[in-house]
Amino acid sequence: MLNQFTNEQLANYKVYLNLIEERMLNKYFEEQKPYIFCKAGCSHCCEKGEYPVTKIELAYLLLGFSQLPFDLKTEIIDKIKRLKIEKLEYEQNRKNTDSVENFMYECPFLKDNKCSVYEFRAVICRTHGLMFFIDDENSIEPKNKIPYCVHLGLNYSNIYDAETDLLSEDKMKALGITQKPLAYNLSLKTLFNSEITKNLGFEFGEVKALIDWFPD
Ligand code: SF4
Image (cartoon, rainbow, N blue to C red):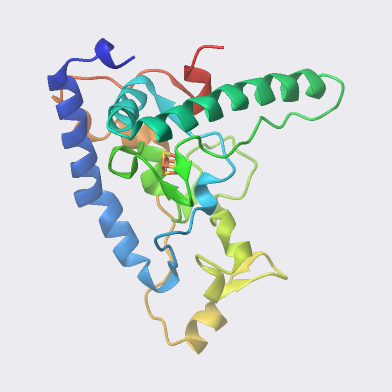
């Protein structure tokens, strides 16, 4: 997986990550500061998901993985093998139901509530915790998506009204917050095709759930 990319391509991907953080994501998190309760040791975003990534993102994750201690690497490999089996079983069982829900799992790189490859984490991981909007005219879902952790008393929960399932301007006023909550376009399609990607000499390509990149 790693050797499909040259060192130069991986270095350029690192440049891309730094640029999207500097120009977009850090700015967004700063703007939403009154509503963000992300902190070290909080790992809800990594405990249940699909983690869509591309090949170059996975190659960079594996670069981080290659630098981990032997025991932790073994643990992660075992977890990936276990997840692959669980996913297969889940999909077999799903055939007998009406469910269309995909298999959700804890990220194999999560260890003791911390990302073991934090510096190498994928683009989707860097957007966790922000409110975003659905960049699809045909979507029937609400346009603005509040992160799931609002229900755990975390991000945006200080202005969330559980009865209406909406953010409340009254709560904002009561807290004296003048910066309105904003939803950002965080779709991977947009982030991957930003101005920044041009001229960096690599392509994102196909997106797959993280564990689907590993052979059965
Ligand atoms: S790679 Fe790290 S940040 Fe991303 S989902 Fe896995 S544990 Fe979380």
